[in-house]
Length: 350
Length: 263
Image 1 (spheres, rainbow over the protein chains, first blue to last red):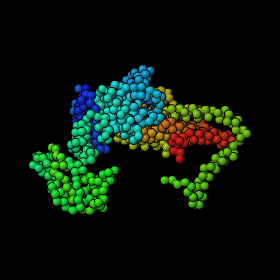
Image 2 (cartoon, rainbow over the protein chains, first blue to last red):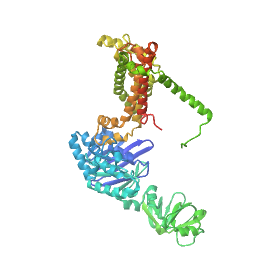
Image 3 (cartoon, chains in turn brown, green):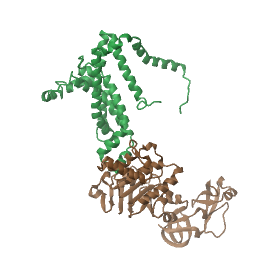
Image 4 (cartoon, rainbow over the protein chains, first blue to last red):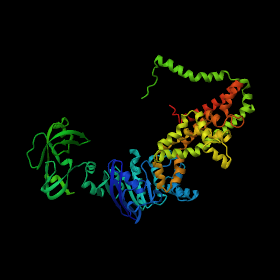
């Protein structure tokens, strides 16, 4: 059971070209900022949006191939979808919602209802069969939505922001439940989220997309250790630069350069953790090879850390103690110097 | 934000009171002149009852026709994109602003015995619409259906279409989606549109008298009966008017929350 999809389409200002391959038994999370095209990708896979190019292949069966004018309508695709906000039919009770798909496949009402009740029981929702969606909590609605999607025995399960409709207090518990239910489904699972914690917790592999393109894939650890986009770097909370390495120097393109501990050649990413950045009021004279003038712009104070945003030839974020920030009066802004040891710059090829 | 208890400037208050009186006075006039002692016998006189029965049957029939033809039109307006859609919508909305008499005249020239289509109906099927009960239904539908179309179109446009997407991913074809998701979800709009349409059909006068005539027992509906009675027996006209007033009030109150947006 494999999903092989190349999704090319234009929608509004979004120009999408995403290749996605999901192996049997794998849970993949598509992670990206708002407007990256995550929901569009899911809708295209489900057949709700036509492709302009590319191909969708599930278990070797072509679901869509514009070049060959093949397009299977959504109702014939073996794909279950759990939508954002769940979209339970408000005029039907929980059992009828879950039985809906079976009824569409010509299963008689009593058989479909019995089957639906089984599914609700499996989700721990047997007592809520008669409830209308408006009477269910977010977590309960999600379980009904999951039962509805799974009741027709799909081979691919798509989930769009499955936890975003929940309030913070129930999210942890529902997330744990969802992981358990996802693990018990033995088809292919693709979920879409803008929440990196959710993605890391629920999936085996991340696919990061931005503006309709895949920018990075890999396990949560791989992605966070070697960010390849500003979005991921911001999520992880590190400074990311892109430049051209020659020996122990990385030219950043705007005239400034970084000295690094390794020797590399070619296009590289350079990551500097904010903790590795030291801030001074006057020009430091010491071993750090990377010393830049700058201007302190803003200081965010968290519990025991202050993050100082410094603009200049090397714009970055430095993390210092609130005491140090106060001693240097960084909150007042003004000229500063920053330094980073060459060994603190981690560099990897693009 | 709305503030509670704004003081009304005096000129505004005077004009507003005049405006309210303008609507209330005629009702009071009607009630004051109502022959309460003979009201029941007036109402149950055979002419009044006949007109009432005819009105109810015809207005319900035209509401039925409007539902069957109007929902598909509203769906097409809300969901399909084709050249000339706005022009078509304008044409089917026209009866709302057209003087009903003009509508009746137009119907005569289209469906009358010598009309564009009417002559064929007559020759081929022996069907004559003008001056028949069916003609009353045609005239009322012509004038009242736009209310249903507009209301249902608004309902369809306001509906979250992702529910239809959800149904399709569950295996529902377009027809099943329409039957099991779209129709139930726009049911409140359908109901509101049908009630408005029915109320308009019940009160129809101009198109009916022009196209269907004013034959007691056949095409004389309540509004026509009121108009005729006014010249011969004003008491009868008042009682019939009160009945129509009551019906309108019930419709208004029952729709208050659904359609007219209770504050």
